[in-house]
Image (cartoon, rainbow over all chains, first blue to last red; front, side, top):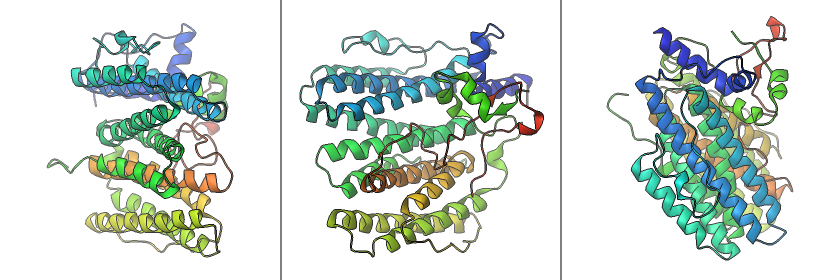
Length: 220
Length: 191
């Protein structure tokens, strides 16, 4: 293994541990690989940028929804918003340690700049995120919000189940599994709010994940 | 080399706990996915899934309200499907199923967490993307069922940002003040 490869893995591991960020904050180190990214780093960047963008959009959507629903539901949506932000923060820390720019979070439903011309975000993903942001702008009833949020959660379950297994980092794949589990639980709650039975809600989340499992490739 | 410890994690504060969630078995220069562990990982997952299915079956025998019974019956069927899939994958991997324990009544949530922990370990370490994806999908499925069972029990259906199946936050981070004997990496083998 090359020294650069070893350093990159170590950087990811430290970022994962929350160490790199803490050290950098104290001025002790700079992002270890800034300006010296390998092609594999760009693959990780691409994975992380789309994941972070989805998480940040979802956190923003929960924040928006929590202002629009009645008081009984608000604490649940606020809790889910915090969990989405926790996912984004974890992934941002890894991206930061790799030395890449961090994607901005949207701060309004017209803040298209959060998903336009973002380094590492493919055109198709950018367009989909912009469509979702635009759709959020048109929601009005609590039911609209629950349905929209459930779709965002499905998008994330699909992303983590489809793309998470393909990243080279064991740590990141493990984290994808943990996040997918959280998103599945959010789906259960949201679908319950929409009137699904418990078993319908759970099986819907399971089906979304099952449909996203990568197919076997010839090289494996 | 950074030392890592549970204490260190909490010293980071703020979003540090979240950042720590990316942790795993870093530090090795070898590919841990190429160590031929599929039979062991799949057998562990199959055993945990089998026990979970039994726990659902045992728990559903007590005349619960209709919504609970309907959910549990659905979960028993889903668990059996997952177990069948795992058994097939285990056979393909050249492994053998191990004997599963008999769960005590009322342990659905405990066994759900045990299955999640097994899938979590497998998700990172299985040798192919398809196998890892299957582990992620099964973890998500059990997490969804756990959410329902927790809600039935009057608990928070989605209490944690990172669903690990472990009793506490498993992640640990650097703290140079820790003694070497407390140093550990963060991916612990799950039972």
